[in-house]
Amino acid sequence: MDIISTKFSLTNPDGFIIRGYELHSENSSGKLPAVIISHGFTSSIEETTPYGNIIAAEGYRAFVYDFCGGGFNSLSEGSFEDYMTTLTEKGDLESVLEYVRSRDDVDTDQIAIMGCSQGGFVSTLAAPEVSDKIKALMLIYPALCIPDDARRGSMQVLNFDPQNIPDHVGTSPMRICRDYIKTVLDIDIYDVLKKYHKSVFIIHGTSDKIVPVEYAQKAFSVLQDNGNDVEMHLIENGPHGFFDKYFAEAANHIIAYLNKVFTR
Image (cartoon, rainbow, N blue to C red):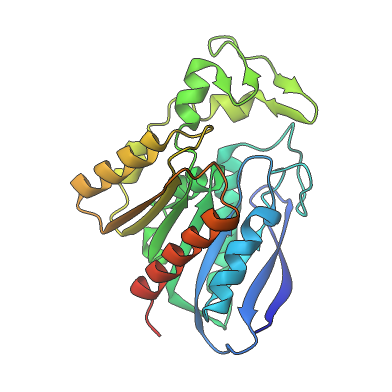
């Protein structure tokens, strides 16, 4: 079965061009449920396209795109070092959602937003505000640790004094602007989650060295207490970013979940 890939582009709230691809199976046509997939920190559609392909093969539409300034090899405009923050990425996601909703080949009552790593954090930020426009939130090894990392002054290989943040942190290409850090310092991501009341899917590796699995486990507990329909899967020994057998296991859970929340 072939997957048909079609380019799309649109403008984000700051005037930068977002570029991506719509994916669907050659056997699919008409108004279909859709999944918008957001990539992680420094990443690109190379991370999200494998997920898009398995979703498209199941008979849904998938939309993969690069955040503006979101990575080192971005298709989209914008500077990684001087522009990108999780809030600019939230604006990008909301713009893509509006674009997807405007298409005649999408069932606008059946749209899920899905994010990998930082894309999961960004999708969580957006979810309460777009709740009436989406059916589900899907978090793939979500980087819910971002605010905690910023508050302690250590974000992956980037170290800084959170009380005295310089204009830029790190050295090129791994160099971020002060706003990237400042804009997350006061975020309680679990309080954000509590404001979203629809279905949530979480999947995380137990051997994740970048985002400890405890962040996903806490999210699951918070959502259960919140009364959400929430489903969580832990990939035994899974790292941060799934490949080979870990990807295959994650893919099975993702498709089973979509077949549960979407109707055709």
